[in-house]
Amino acid sequence: MSETKTALVTGANKGIGYEIATGLGALGYRVGVGARDGARREAAVEKLRAAGADAFGVPLDVTGDRSVTAAAELVERRSGRLDVLVNNAGVSGETGPGWAQDPTTLDLDVVRAVVETNVIGVIRVTNAMLPLLRRSASPRIVNVSSSVASLTRQSDPDTEVGPVMAAYAPSKSFLNAVTVQYARQLAGTGILVNAACPGLVATDFTGFQGPRTPEQGAATALRLATLPDDGPTGSFFEDGGAIPW
Ligand SMILES: NC(=O)c1ccc[n+]([C@@H]2O[C@H](COP(=O)([O-])OP(=O)(O)OC[C@H]3O[C@@H](n4cnc5c(N)ncnc54)[C@H](OP(=O)(O)O)[C@@H]3O)[C@@H](O)[C@H]2O)c1
Image (cartoon, rainbow, N blue to C red; front, side):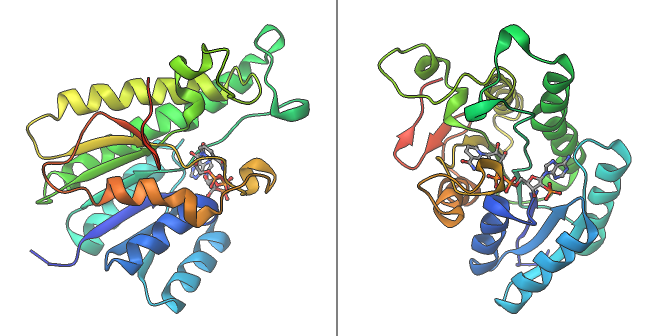
């Protein structure tokens, strides 16, 4: 079995996903750049290669069964196994002024679209990649979540949690709940499954507003992607430590 570890990052053409790919490349991983748009994907692969990373493009729309199946086949052809899967691709869904999503007037199609990408997409990709992850000596799955998923923080009037986001925030709570179920199911297999919050990061996602850089936003996901074998599973972290559910 090759000593070079292989990682796949979804939504790696820009933002936090690109920086996670950069970080894994710098650590010596062969990095699959999962992205749905061909031109954006190839531009990211070229940039990563120019920086010295062993990167390859993986056409991947997390909402499509055929796309995800083809992505798993491509990773298998390239590397024969997968050591790290970072489920980073995510959408906020349409928002009103100040990023708000008012639950009382919410367009149900927005809810469906957000759950389709942020939750069902993660399950679809994870299950397609699991046979390849099971071939790794130290497989890791990182789900990029958000601290807005924390029901503890959302229901604490003394904690600043930003605007009401009735589609996006619950989609990440759903993702966290799914993360815990995977961790339970895969306990004892060596596959560690955790959720990461990048903090508030200046990317397309936030209209480039936010105090953190994409590189800073990638840090927790990188830590969870490279956990030792006795590391945690079924947990939810930000830079400062565990986040309450
Ligand atoms: N930025 C923040 O402050 C913040 C805070 C907490 C959590 N997060 C989470 O961090 C993750 C990355 O966000 P970001 O800030 O880096 O946002 P971003 O710059 O908008 O990047 C999102 C990435 O996801 C991809 N994507 C969206 N839908 C996809 C699909 N169906 N299939 C494949 N790829 C898809 C996008 O691809 P395209 O270029 O093709 O659209 C893009 O590569 C998300 O899960 C987000 O929820 C972000």
